[in-house]
Image 1: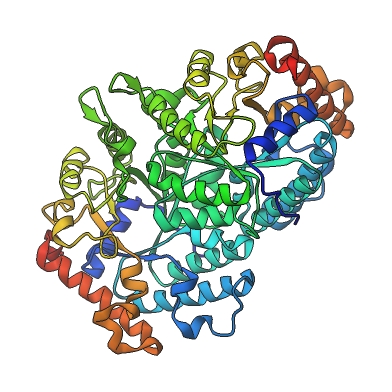
Image 2 (image 1 turned 120 degrees about the horizontal axis):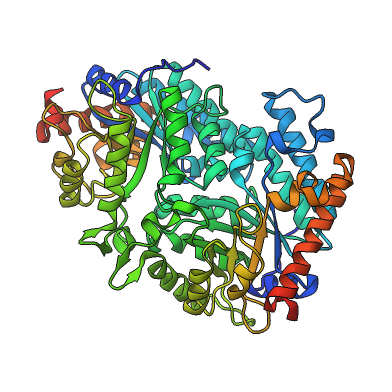
Length: 309
Length: 309
């Protein structure tokens, strides 16, 4: 496993986005029922080690396609954990493979805990010589800023990044996140904390190593949160399968087309099953991944300031 | 791995607490620097597979001691994950060993995500024939009730339980949790959701399969939350090393001494290092675990309604 350069995660992300001329992040969400048939044939459902190997093959094959097309991938820990220790081995293999192919790896674990337990998570996922060595990790804010601090310290030390959940993309995300306290919704209170941490960890790009997760499915709040966190990279889920379009994410970018990366998982990795790409056929599922990634880049370029990259 | 009986988690927990006549939950937080020396000697720090084996040996040895003294153990996922896939193997081994010795296993993972990703976590940790097969899991509420629903469904189907973070025990836990919206703090809004889910999943004991995490370090809020969630089991961390006493948790119990379990991790598993148990010497660290567990049971019995068990 290569070690990280010691510079700021925000600068590394900006450089990768500029190099690929796109803010597209490819979400690696292996779901057994949706894997292209060539990868699952002969594997018995319930044989977790064999399923985990198929997940790793699937994700490596995606990396082969998108390494030249996108700045980052976002493996979803849940699908690997679902397969137990074998799945976690596959996750490690995928993180390593993606990094060796020049992709930044944003591990979507939504972890957090208190004090020294948060240190253990931070060290395990982001630490120098750690078990997974991701470039960035998603974390939950519910436990407060003292729970985020151990992650920030490990991230800064290693040139890694964090994305704190602020406004999530699910329909019920607002149940608690939209509650108004002191005249502002909870997600704005979280945003204030993220902005403080972003300023404290900012690099040459002007952005910090600490960013926020803000769903594309709430375009109005996305613009509000872009303004509230001028130093924070936004990781924007909800594009594609969850219903958000290029126009919905337009408010996420700064004048130079930076400041946000937009994730698409199912819409890219299972593109072979989408009507517009079915002509490739399942055997050419990787071509569908390539076409879907390029098409999303083109859509974002034409509808948002990502076109200035 | 034995399968769970199909009855309600709340009833299984009530039966276990009554059988052991104590609400003590022993937290399994293996920390390398604090492991009794007999377990670490000869293991090179950084050799994660060997460290994970030491963690498993340590936790199994604790299970051997506490299986007859306590209703449940609470492995902290972070410390196992820190060691990578080997650590997750050790976690599986510990969960299995504890369950085979009659202990309920509350896995402390503080997981959550949206939609089908939450389903993957729920299935992986709690599902029938799943990778870890814990009896209960801690989950974060930040993403709202639609994110909790997949966990509830899996838990109910398998007779497993959930503990939703409401008021955490850390000093900064109030930063967001205490924000007041519509006249009530955020933790009360979460508590209302937990109470709804508890009622919807209640068993013969009157309690539900969905409970809440409420820190012992905030005794006033603990009493407030006990009253706000009459159908929810409370998982109470913060006792011992974090500063809370038996008197601080008195408000967590119902009239019969049920309705709450109180976790102690470091104060029990590393008891050999506490002044009051140092006379055992490190070689007899398991006797220190036994004495600390019994002493905590006695303290709770004398200061709280757990004495009525």
